[in-house]
Image 1 (cartoon, rainbow, N blue to C red):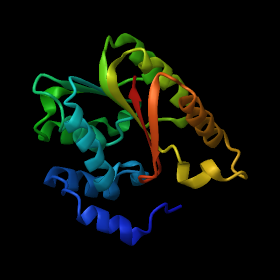
Image 2 (cartoon, rainbow, N blue to C red; image 1 turned 180 degrees about the vertical axis):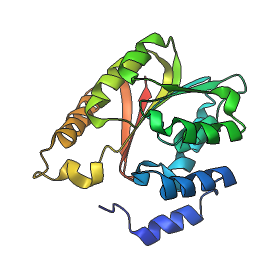
Image 3 (cartoon, one colour; image 1 turned 135 degrees about the vertical axis):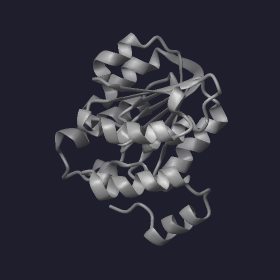
Image 4 (spheres, one colour; image 1 turned 90 degrees about the vertical axis):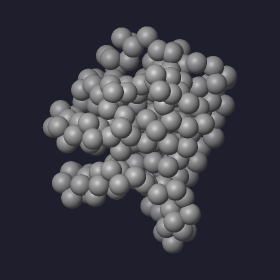
Length: 212
């Protein structure tokens, strides 16, 4: 489901800052070589992630769901010189591909890329987090939120991808477990007084929360 006319989205891309050459290559290689390339954040969302990170100037970013590393590289653009991003994924098959792009970027020393189950790994990370990006298995979104919210700095930002789920979120006929989990998650966040929130129809829906 397209939330924005493709011509409008293309216009928005043209009038946003360009990707780096490395990100263009990563996008191209992901589409050519990797299954489900739609999972990649892409130009417009990537520039948004970079923009938010540059506003915050975070010391510590947590990303749940690395995929091929596009979003991690975008988020890393705003890190303080002493800052780092911890990015978690369970897909060992993508590690070599993803790490090769991290190693070629200027952010390699600041990227802590872990092949690990986020449910088990997050409790071992002390924090505090300035910025969190959740883009992993949808049925565990509520759990990931609960694991990170207590470790956020005041004023920190939590970004959550795919919260419109190709429009299924508003389709009453869609009753699959992932769609229902996302409906429950969105409602949970709406009712949580610890965060201010705005849901943006960017790509597949991006929920942005500021920790009070």
